[in-house]
Structure formats: C-alpha cells, structure tokens
Image (cartoon, rainbow, N blue to C red):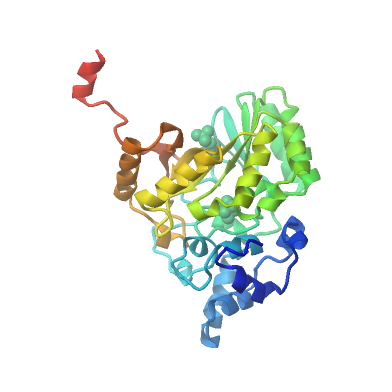
Length: 361
Ligand SMILES: *Cc1c(COP(=O)(O)O)cnc(C)c1O
Ligand code: SF4
C-alpha cells in the first residue's frame, strides 16, 4: 500500500492492517473487493434513510471496487475522478427514455451467443461477464445481472466452432467483462483453441486489470500469454492518476514479454473532459510505452447519462490536442453509432479543405 495515495486511511478503516505481501497478492485483492450496499453506506457515510435507494442501486447494477483502486481515490470527495468511475451514483437509476440497455444492438450481431461478428476480418468474444471492478460508465452494464450465464465451457466451445468455420476472421478480440478474470487454465484453453485455427493470425485481449488490479499481471500470466503471440493487450486508463507505479509495472511486464499494450479511454464528464487532463493522460501513457488507440464518445447506455459529454466539447479537445501534442499520443476519437452501424471517426480536419487541396497538387 503506497502511503501517499489519498484513500489509504479510509482503506485501513475498512480492511484493518494489511501487510505488504497480502496487499500485493491479487487473490487477496479479489477476496477483499467492496461489493455490498452496506459497505457503500459506510464509505459514503449515508444515513439509514438512504439505505433502500442504495440497496436498489447495488441490486440493479452490481458494485465491485478493488482495495488497490480504492486506495487511489479520495472517497469523501464526490467529484474525485476515480471515485466517479467506481462508486455507484443514485443518478444511475434515473434513466432518460433515449438511454437504453443495448444501444449498439450487440445482441443482434451474434451468430452464436456472446460472440459479436460485425466486421468481416475480426470478431469479439465476450468470454465472461465478470470484472474486477465494475466501471459505472460501462456500456455493457446490461450483462452484469445474469452473473452465471456467461463463460461456460459450452459457450466458449460454440465460439471456437463458429470461428473455425468462418474463414474471413483473422483477428479475435477476447473481451467480456474482463477476460483476465477467467481462471488461467480456462483462458489458456480458449486462447490455444482459437490460435490453433489456421486462419486466425492475431489475438487481442481487452482488459482493465492493468488499471484496477495491476498485481494480477504476474510473470506466470505473462509467460502464458506470450505463447499465443502476436497478442495485443488493450486496456482502459481514463485519468492520469490511474497511471501509478503499480500500473506502470504491469504494463512494462506485458511489454517485456512481447505483448504490445494499447489504451482505449472513454470521454467522461468530470473525469477527463478537459484539454489539460486529457493531455496529462496521453503524455502519461506515452511515458509508459502504452499507445493511445481510441477515445470513445460515451454511448447512450441506460445508467450512464451523467457521464455524457457532448460531441462539440469532445471535438474542441481533439482539435487542441491535434495542434499541440506528439502524434504518438493522439487516439482516434470515435463514436460507435447506435443501432450497430459501426464506428464513426470524429476527427478535426479529416477532410482537406479546398485551399489545402491546391497545395497537394
Ligand atoms: C470496436 C469493435 C471491434 C474492433 O474494431 P477495431 O477498429 O479493429 O478496433 C470489433 N468488433 C466490434 C463489435 C467492435 O465494436
Ligand atoms: S472493465 Fe470493461 S467490461 Fe468491465 S465494467 Fe469496466 S468497462 Fe465494463
């Protein structure tokens, strides 16, 4: 536990004395996740009269915060950008009608359960619905409820079978939930089965574990992943304060094992919707050799309305970044169009003006 993190004192109240060895053990971290509404009431210091509402909130959208991530935030500041990402907010229950469970129509593009095949050369396999920490802005919140339904061996087998029959697929995105929440053996079995298919060339693992539970990135796990290269890891840092020594070490270990790491952020109100925070985030990622890949416009997902940043504000941030910071730091700002129409690039100056066209000829 790094004594300088703002949530350490509150963490000690919740967990008691924890020695360094336990703290750095991912199993201890998983076992001590904050998951109940009673703990939430205690952390937020709420009165008994709020209990029913918070109980409904945690029943509707589950909660889980790792002690590590908890230690990074200031739990008593409702505007803390890390707290906003993981502590349930009563506004999640106030949905406007245009905010729906599955705006991207992912459930439509599934040739077999939990496998989305929307673009010909790549597909996305949701191998579990579990995550170490449930991000309040998650666009797959709808899947948290049926906790037992996902990731059975049968359903993974069906995915492998579909991929083996579909020759156009050269890249498989292993997603979730968080695939690094699967047991090592189940994950390895899936990676190996997919990689054994002759037309599959590339694996991509989407995981927030390096950010929310970096101690899970162990030499043993990296050595296993390394066997299935080329394998790209895509993670999700949303705020510069998440780039800690622990998270940097996790990314470095992946890189040292030949596993390139990219980042997908979500543009989130009060968290990273300013030029300065975004610049610090992107510079920080470049410093730890993680390539900013996407910046996602927040989707109209039920229970995430309070994170919505309007497109014009996003555009302005991108315009300012484009003009001032290293090209290696710039992500592609995209909006995944509702209805499952695919990703739309939202980029300043993506089409040359007539004046520039003259220069080009
Ligand atoms: C975003 C996405 C992908 C990956 O697209 P890239 O542009 O290659 O990152 C694949 N499948 C689905 C359904 C997606 O939403
Ligand atoms: S790690 Fe990903 S899938 Fe899990 S809650 Fe966060 S955004 Fe959603």
